[in-house]
Length: 127
Image (cartoon, rainbow, N blue to C red; front, side, top):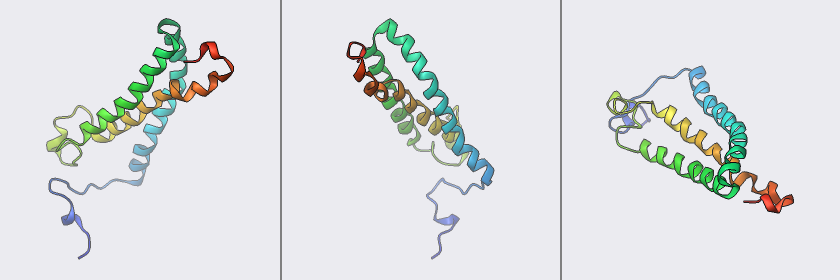
């Protein structure tokens, strides 16, 4: 039998999406992630002068790993990832926005483990 709308899991309905809407939903998280990536360097520099380089990097790495994981776990709750309104009534943001937020949170690692190799020339400042 050919796959059709009736082959979707219970509670999931087909959703018509235009190509431009699909493209926008794919590029917006990338833009947000880039913006956070640029800003996290300055924020990490300021934070490291207050709480230290090691603590700053550990905190950013924990948030960049655990934050997206928590968002993705929340998205697996029954009713959340469905296209129907019954799951979305419980959310403040649609699942696509939450998924984008998870992706954006991962950019915080740019102020953590992603800069460790830059400290090779400056061992006293290494975290």
